[in-house]
Length: 305
Image (cartoon, rainbow, N blue to C red; front, side, top):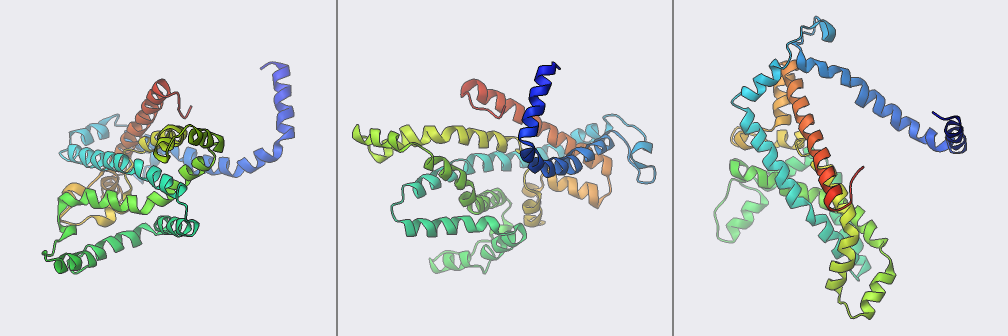
């Protein structure tokens, strides 16, 4: 490294050392909990035995991966995981944007604040409580079935219909997270220059035209960045919610990779096999993240890096 460049960097560091000090706890956290445990990845390529330890266990190469790819559950797990992930990604992406636009153009401040509070609140409900609420509300004697009966219909066992699992999973998640996800879009809308709207009004543009030609283009870079980040987690469907909503009836649709890893890893003590499945899952996420980021940079000019 050239001496001048090194000297300049040292001056910048001395001038802004306080900012680097604030970053230190986050870096230590990532180092301890994200990078140090990476040495355990080698378990996926071994026949791990706790008595022998990680380094003493024999190597088996790609045997664990071949076993997973050849199992009868592989296609079911992959289809269930991708179905829920794509469903959630497509259904949930536009809803926060719509809510942000509605709240941004709401002229009644009191109603706007009440609506914001109501939509934000579900985000802070724990997953266990949320699933408990879903089971109670959709039970045979729950509020939904009571309303159906009063309207002249018959009781419907929602949690006992396997084909409804994905819909219940996705739309309950949208209900829980839409308000919180809209916060960043509301912040973007407030940063749009008022002069653009004033000029559009002078030119005779109505509210819908301003939304289409001013607000949506302003939201698009943020929307694309969040879409890329969500695509990078496409294979990592939430374990807690899927596991808590599982029952003997809907297991055909609710068994996903994360719940399967838990069962074979901790339940059956197949540590190497479950590590191999988890590594495969994360590798697919990494490839998707890189691919979508590159495609976005080519076609829209917006990307993470």
